[in-house]
Amino acid sequence: MNPEAIMHDAPVNVMELLPRIRSAAEEMKDILVANVVMIGEIPSPTGGEESRARFFSQRLNESGLLHCFTDPLSNAFGLLPGSDGKKTLCVVTNGDTLVQEAADQTVEVRPDNLVGPFVVDNSLALGAMAALPELFDRLQIRLQSNLLLLMASRCQGRGNLEGLKKFLLSARARPDAGICFEGVQLGRLNYTCLGMRRGEIVCRLPDNYNWAQYGSTGAIVPMSDIISRIGRIAIPRRPLTSMILGSVEGGISYHNIARQAVLRFELRGESAEILAQIEKQFEEIAEEVSSTFGVQVTVDIFARREPGGIEIGHPFVREARAILSAMGLQPMLYPTTSIMSALVAEGIPSITLGFTTGERRHDLDEIDETAAIGPMTTGLAQLAAVIIRMDQELANEAD
Image (cartoon, rainbow, N blue to C red):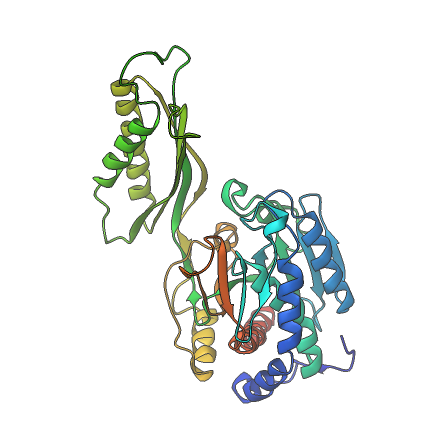
């Protein structure tokens, strides 16, 4: 970081800076693409993020950040010191992915898109965060607050935000504000979190199951009944509530009775009370099917998050909306299930932003996602502008 960078002690109009920020970000398109590809091709399954964490920390160190480390849980972070350092703003995303096989890590660069396994979540955001210090250097801008860039480990699936939660508990300098940065979609602006329950329903055959009995159904038919009963649960529209049945697994062949079937699900909602009610109904369904079919049915909910966040009138939300609108983006305001919930649970005022546009298409393999290259520079410029404005708000609080 250039030591002669402009200080934010003097008032800076972020809106007037936007053309410069966008121009500087546009010049970094190749850097952004290279970062995303390099990071995306490093295997990083939940609980196995070590290699990606080392690479991300090294990139931050090369950019001149201080205290670039990886901790025992493979969280990776670096600190860009502020001019006074009275406050700390944290930009965070998850470092783990749902890719399990290293052979599946290839990221293909096409003229307008990047295509790869789960590249949207969240190699994109990590690539942008790794480029952020250089963008500030090119702009000759120095923040008043410390800027903490964090790749959080063990966030996906059964990880249940373990890396981020433990980092926040052990961090020497507790962040005063946070930005959760997601790969997609550009224009999102989340300021509240939905409550969430994530788990599995497992149907197993007992040890004394009568395999020889004609018409023995195994675990598949009971699981089908479970899914049918779940489908009859009334899901309210208000407060906002949704139920996702993500995957079903069971059996190994056409002619062998399945010994086990697994249903993976996620419940989301604005009301913790309603989520608790649905969870109770899941338990009752499990008990009833277990007794009806003579199988063992268990409900394992391994991730719980409570609803919360800040108000739409909060300065962070108000200023972020103004910046997105000035950049020609339509702010998309909706509750999120992002890792921002870990910050919210610690009382850290936070928002979530998106980096570019992306999608999963039927012409691609099921694990592949596509991310648009063109909007990436807008996404980086948006992030930088929001950081500058949030820094100013934090500085006002410190005075």
